[in-house]
Length: 198
Image (cartoon, rainbow, N blue to C red; front, side):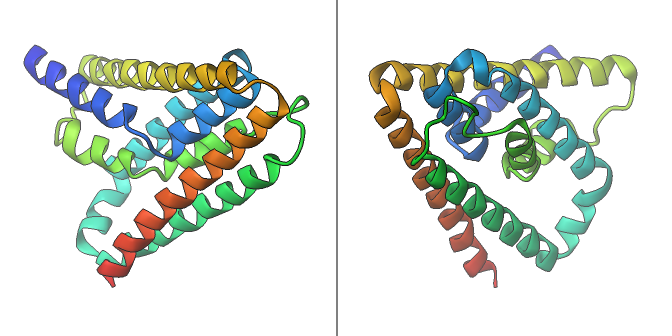
């Protein structure tokens, strides 16, 4: 199991550290308002992946595998949600962020629940069938939580570095608008795959 766990951690860290919608929101928040005020977003990311993986393993996996139309509808939903978040970040790029954060806990939670990385974690990296013994669930769940925390901390650090290099309200504006562009590009990539599915 140690070898399997090492392989899982390596794959999970590589996957979770890659740029994506959740990481974009975390980095954008840290760049706009600092890493301390953005720390609650890591709990939302962890909860989002836990919810997504549990639902995928327990309920949705067979439906997605058997119904390409369901997978396409899910992709369309993800694409639409990412465009909504991009518009929200773009609008926030024009206002002072001292009172709030560009990405809320709810934004990160929902984005993570629909993040395609959850599918890869559930069906490619975690053991299949997933073990139901308490010790195994705690071991694999703990390893996943550690990978999520490490990846989230990396993106908080990236955002904090951006904050230091782009001080003031202009920096916040550029970061929010840059995050909006990144989310739009991610949505475009998902939309492009969706077109080829149809």
